[in-house]
Image (tube, rainbow, N blue to C red; front, side, top):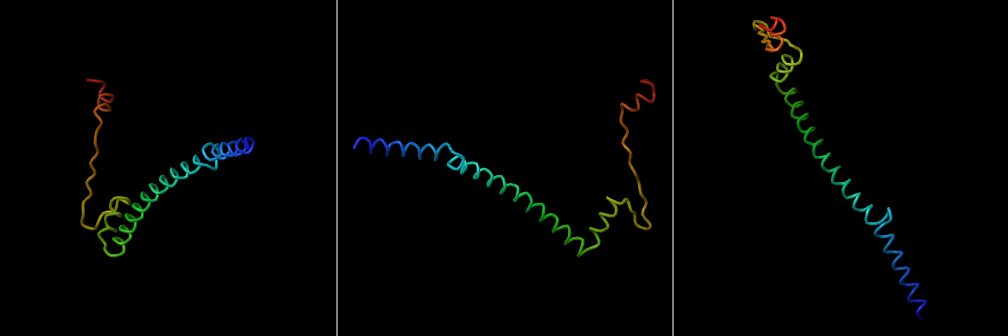
Amino acid sequence: MRAVIFILLALLVLLQFRLWVSDSGYRAAWRLTEEVAAQQHENAALEERNRALKAEVDDLKTGLDAVQEIARSELGMIREGETLFQVVEVDPESLDAVSGGR
């Protein structure tokens, strides 16, 4: 009878060891849970980006204001009759270098 109890106890310890320590036990479940959470976070960010892109596409389809804004900001285009003013900011350190530090 003692041998049977010892064998059952050894099997229990072996199964518990596999459950807690092996790569297919609780550690794998915890790792997968963390990976799922990270993927959900990434999916939420990508969904937000997709919403912004969809809104931009809708703006481009429905009105000329968005097209004009993109043409001005990205392509540097101006409308007929408009005057372009370009403001250049001067770095004070570069002025010192040019003037000789006066």
